[in-house]
Image (cartoon, rainbow, N blue to C red; front, top):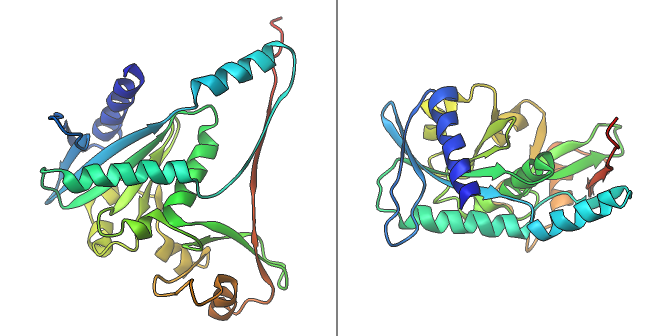
Length: 254
């Protein structure tokens, strides 16, 4: 509970002092409700905060290994994570049931684990169904492909207008380009308050910085790689499965 309250206080300070927006904490009733209501300009924004911590059992095991003098190695597949998807689904249920009226609804995913940079990457991959694509026939660098796989923004497109992903050092606003309110939200003051800290797959695609699979594409009757090959005139594209690797060790005090 203390960790949750600390996260809420930090987020409220960010909204007020870094984004310069008016925010109020929503008082919970007998049912779970979203955490914050932001009001700026002509719009109101409903936000549900979800903090993701590393399990205490894992941290205890890691500390035991480090104190024994071992190098603690970790290897995890990057990409969409089912536990994160469940967290997003829970947030959407709270946003949907809320009696507080708002123009836009968002989930705030706060990385509080021991590798927050890995968590943020997983947040974004889960929201967007994002994967890396390499075109071996053209010597092009790896490039993101949005909506390549299952996407929480697609599943919850009629509820979620976007998401804020953050750790203790940075934050980004992820726009749900599949929301029917996308264009209106894109022009809002909340989006403007993030300046360049915004992920917008439509803009990235226009600028040649990413690929994107259109929502009309039927994955049950078509191959995504074949679709990308035709859409972007690729030669030998391949989805690259990435890994998150880390090694940690304890150093003696001098």
